[in-house]
Image (tube, rainbow, N blue to C red; front, side):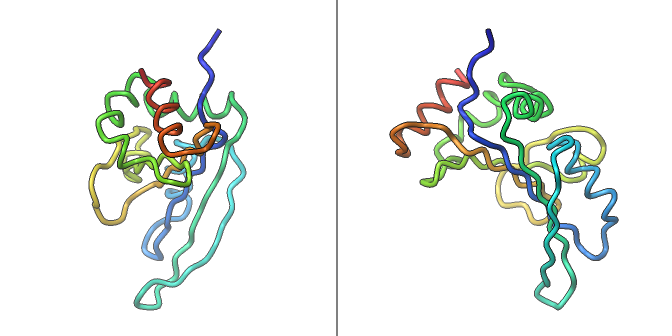
Length: 146
């Protein structure tokens, strides 16, 4: 039996600038989130440039396992995020990851560290923990990773 995933859902979001190819940005997002339904929003940049925001969400265990597998599985996630877990889980119970949009377009998953500008796919994992406290959420993610 597989270990229970400590997440309620996984949401992915990416910005598509006016200078980017929307089909390519969508392909990068689909590499991460799979066949989830995508939502599209419009925004305007600082200089009035149009920005398309694409997002998708998975909430079924099987779909979440596929996303985790695309990220390299639990072992790779352990190596990549466990050292910085306190900075990645917020008070709202979201585990935040940032992936390279370019790498995802090329069929790879590459975690981006620090505050690099642009070219990012944002992932939010809603952590399942009761009672919902930051300590319990951190413990749930750590226990699953270890």
